[in-house]
Length: 538
DNA sequence: AACCCGGAAGACCG
DNA sequence: ACGGTCTTCCGGGT
Image 1: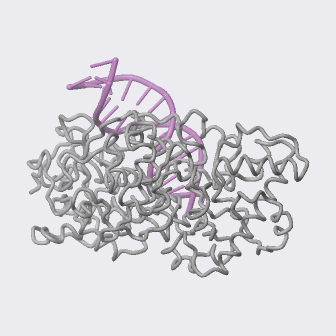
Image 2: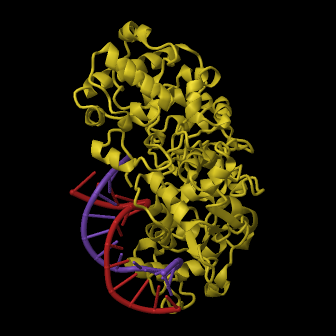
Image 3: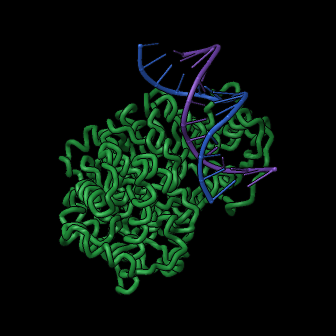
């Protein structure tokens, strides 16, 4: 996982963004939204900019982050003239403004030998200036919600913050430019809404984590989020973050694929929900810009609030900025959830719920989904084999289990809220068992059912592999490795554990609490999947 | 052949 | 330095 740090090594950057991809490298940016590292510290002196700024082509928004690819090209040409720089290789700048802003000085130098520093400085100035303006402005469109956050965020403080940029607004409104990025009509919406153009990845759990409570709420909703299928996003937090994710992804990447296409370019977009979104989100590249993609990121949307979206925005936006740990979207499960819960159901060609209540989903287009994931993570060589390996790791922590007998079908053992609420996998493991039950969901039902559940955290009991639960003897052996998964419901600790254990060798995980069973429920629904039986435990 | 499974090693990030 | 989360490979099974 590399997420691209802002400053990716040039090389890396390049790698990641193969031109060929549907998405533009830029897309990737979403991750690094505004927060540009570079700028950070310095207080923005607006002035400097002003000087040359005034000379900027009028068609360019004051905030480079909102520029479309065309704007970037316009800007580069302008820089060539204005600063007497050697000609830029436009092929190296097939990205929107946001993406360009995320490039580090070295990245820029690599793409434009001899002009990197100048370009970097100019961009920094422009960004700073834009930020400054924003601050002044009450709220920026962009992150509406965020705003709240904003203040909070360090960035903010620093000033670096993102820019929420007023521009965004402008963008929306006026600028066509951006539009391009956003291409999608939706974008605009998005913007409005959340604005989030963000890009950011969703804040995934982490971020969210922040609000457990939300989670709860959400949780309940959980997956369903709305329950309806569409919704998705359930969790609030999630939503938010989801938004992000989703958004991007789809588009971008897949863009290519079906859906995207389908949607029509934009299509997709607009997702309903999307409202806001962020486009960016998830990640994928999409984001903003890329023409291709439009992306509207579905993700963005996600945020549903209750329905709608949550404001995801806030956070998202700043993802990068945000100090929060962002896993944002970066986590595979989070990514998948976002796609699954895309309000507009844009990614159904890639992945779709088979049973939302139980958390069972099918990867419709393994290769395409893997590609999206690869884009999201900037691992362009990602394929289903690799992605599925990552999915298998989730077996150990009881996040997922394989639906036996059905190809490309997996089942979430925990609802999003639950996952989100758990910041670390490690915790998951620990909790696993106990936790499992998602509070919310479970709560409902389960509550009674069993359990126990334990408080999340800690409880873990370690079980020995063997023992595990004791319960049943599950032999792991018997069980396929996954068993754990398999018996989702099963979750029974035992099995899992066993399996896990195996895998892990007993790692701690085992903790299983007795409860697993309960947990299993996805949304209240108990998942049994296969094996309930297995439950031997029971 | 395509999946699916996990072990092992390593990358990257916070 | 360390743990988490993958990513990449790989051999093996179905």
